[in-house]
Length: 149
Image 1: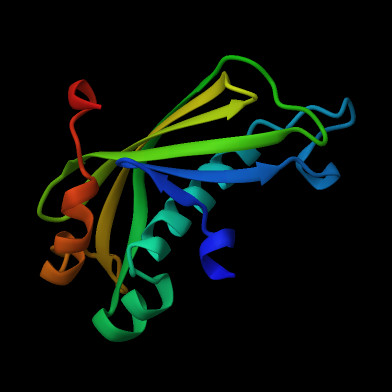
Image 2 (image 1 turned 90 degrees about the vertical axis):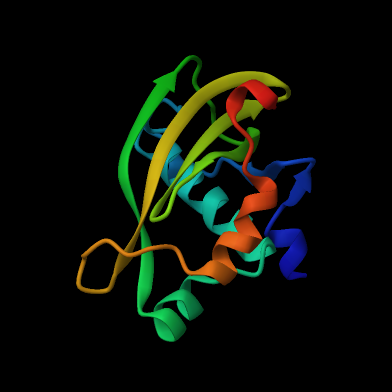
């Protein structure tokens, strides 16, 4: 059941299907712009979960967390109430203490929104930390520069 809720991998891309609910929309039935960031965060979390990296154990076992350092969003077309979206995520860079993710939100194959995020590994006190080797080993096979994908 967890795997179904966590999406799937299509090659190096993680794919998470999401339904647009009433709570995601504004009065016109269009997805509120900030909710795309929530969709992207949810997809990155589920991608990690499928790779065996759980946010709770990252905190409890390593004293670490992943935090968005910066991100950019390109809104092309709106999603609407009841749409079935796909959030396609891939890692395009992995450094000692950070990763860069590129995400595309689509509806019926139509590209709606792009999100680019730099994710930092931090200690629970907020200071930067290297990504632990077991996590790096899990992430590395799914990290491909954009020109190779």
